[in-house]
Image (tube, rainbow, N blue to C red; front, side, top):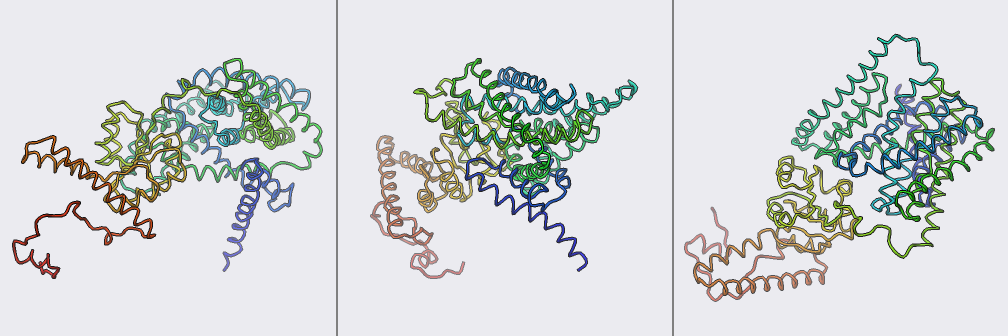
Length: 613
């Protein structure tokens, strides 16, 4: 009983956070503002500025910052070297130009407006120049624009900023006035050596240990252990980098990059995503709670002026850069709208800058409030731009056929690299089709890798894994799993990816009927065609008439299809789901001879008697 007050005091804040989130986030999403704005509003409501349910936001901010760590890990998972090379022009040219130009203008204005030092103004300019990855990606996804030309270029800007935040966080301590300029060169060298050593450890273990480690765990078949291992890797890398004075986000980012070429990448992303989403939600709520209401009221005019100037400035610079590098006016305008909200890393950068003496705590709070205000107003600007562009659509679509990436052409997602799939995919391999294989067997993933297909380790019955592996862009989803859980996958795919055609391997006739009822566009029993070929070859050996044998096989196939259609229609009309007792194997033709038993046991079986074997 003595523990009850402790438990209650621990549970009450959790209940407050959950209640605020499930109340505010759906309301803001329904209003079209997005989940991030809902979390910020919920944080303001329960924090000291609002109802005061939580009086010390700092207690949750440290934990919630792991949401940023996990976000960088997932970003690292997406940074495959091939993707970086393909996007290098947009990343370097547009991303760097936007950050430097916007940051320089903001820094010049911050000195007289807020009274920052030159170092503090530089940090403020870069931080406010960054766009919110969470909000921008959400806005682009809601518009269905992530695969469009302007969506990919906006993502390139976000990509550059997500990479740039790592050196920015690492350099802030070195430019702060509290940095000991008189420290010996040997001390600086030693600190640098520790950082390099930590980097080498992370890179070495990531390069040579992570894949064997995850292969071993995958072989055990324990999914929860894989989830624990993913968190272990991310947090270990983060803490290692933090222990040598560098950013924890850098460690997580490196771990993600080193696993980006792994077959386990999508499974890891799917496993980490729920934790990342919850912690990011907690992070934004903590940011909302930390906003000093009195400070905002006291400087309301200045904050409003800065926000009104900042949002159009960022939008204009992005628009000009995209237009000057080949984007259409509509695409450049929509990308500019998505990139106007300031980034979530502002709330990490400003407190760090204050702790290093680059700005006062009140100035850091004021800048954090400005960043939060742009997060509220930015999506509204994006919605307004989207409304305008929707009513002034161009006659030609922005994404021309020749602009479609090769990875999105003839895309086929295969779930389960079974013995059936290994034969069926030979046909696609012969035409060099773009095939992606999902399987949760390490051995089968290794086998699929020999075919030159894209292979991802993961559970094909999970929606998050299907999304991560590209089911949303697939033209055909081929379900070739050995088990009968293909019906579950068909239901999932039919509901969430209606544009993809579903081709499914059926276990038997009953399974085939179930698959058609669930929405499969094409199904085939795994042994049907091979059995026809086997019987045909046997008949041909006896008759030596290939043409006649081919006609017989075609006739048998037609009779089977007719019976299948009849059984399917009868089951639908009667509202009955076929069971093994209702569909027994039956001859397609009337037998001309009567069955004859050759021994007593056979005779008893034919007559329906019990046989004691």
